[in-house]
Length: 346
Image 1 (cartoon, rainbow, N blue to C red):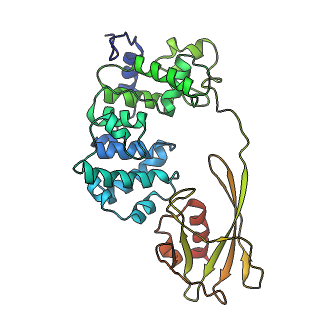
Image 2: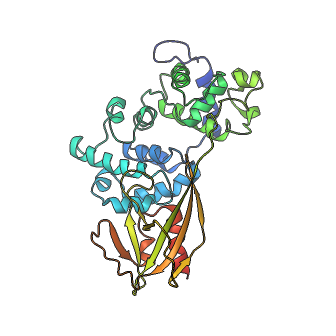
Image 3: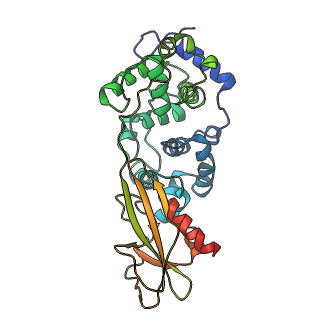
């Protein structure tokens, strides 16, 4: 059977071949596939942004155990949300999840909207994510274009240029629409994502077992290693920061909440030093190199005793003394967690 796209154009055999392959070789037992409620699909789609499935599974299961539905997430303290997200990275996603849950509780009767246009108005939900929620949760035709799908289509249609450019993205959306069938939306969206993550990989794609290899233009042109074109190379700048590990007489460490905007927004961190304190109570700890998408951060922590500093906590919403073992239950950036774990081990 030849499937048709929503506007009546022939989709060719792409969707048929892809679905036939997925029925045998695709993923059918992911935790968010067990109960495809809009809440669980939304949560999975947000977690899967910039993060591989293997990493997401454990976080998803812990998150849904603690917050099984949108109501429980909306009523949660942001610190609890950030603590469960700690280590998953791209923390704006967690803040947006919490904010979106509260908006839905206030404006949509505790439910996610059921149209892609309405979903796109919510924090952290873009066009592809909104469409993925509609397709996966409601089994309605909706065109997706996440990173895996961009790679599949850039190769299959031999689309030149970096997908991050608006003109290239526009062509990719057209190709995605042309191939999306009018039925089996839920299966098709999962199938094309599975194809991108498992076979049409960024490096060393497994073309001999690809179900659509016979019509792949990049394979015909021997250009699978060239498409999609990478982001124009730009040297990532290096930044340095000094952080203070300050302990008081009770063995508590001083934590400081990061501003909502910027790196590690809303997470608990260590106070920043403009200059290292030079006295006998200061000890330099092991340096940490942490890689962000756009820069590399070099962290030099210094251990200081509170003797003589008499640090006051003026606002417990911004600064607080916490036992290191308790601090590990808070939302901490990965390198800060590493430093605190070192205190616990000592």
